[in-house]
Picture 1 (cartoon, rainbow, N blue to C red):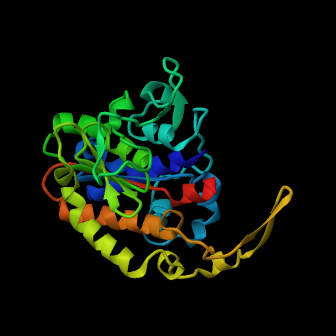
Picture 2 (picture 1 turned 120 degrees about the vertical axis):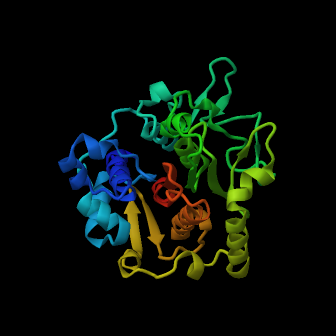
Length: 310
């Protein structure tokens, strides 16, 4: 994850200006008056393991939103992390809190509790349940381990009517961007679609209500096509297929094919495509940025990280 955050924050700032109808240049020229105007929507986009070298390697191929951010946003071409352990959970905990992991309470994805000697997941919350009704992924989770407040919490304190949502391929991507007081942090779990955590006194039905229609559509599509290469790897980009070869890494030879021989939803481009579709779904159905108050939408894309780990 080294270097990813500088590009992310620049992107978030650029989107913030765009959502409020003010260009970055106009805001700079206009001075304090423009800066004081409340934006209608703040969008934070985090791409896990999207290092500066990857950003630059593919920059000429960007279209749409990434092209706009690259051309019109503030881009740090050699950004780097100022903390040591650049894993997903601590990295995401810094983005909207503005604090190092030592101040967020999340130093790593997992750690050993010195009192018990047991391993602890960064967002473990044994008092909670999972909305899809099964113990999967990292078990019951929630924002309790996050000891710092974040922008979503600050916004809710001054604007309780603001709506705040976050979506990701991972629980730790969504929950950190939703803070303690956001309206919903959703991530994909196998065979279900988007899930979330349920705190004592809450119901799974109510917690899933904002994405219930999306999940129905998602499960219908997956049931119809399954985890097949044509569905998971649409397009068959020529530059990706050109990488099909025997690759020697140290003393082993790996044969790569695009699409891979045993494709899975979690390891395919479809994971990010569906995450973006879910973000657009929430944007439309929750009328984010269209209700006269400032709303927030967090989007954490995880497919690049799956590739990095593999």
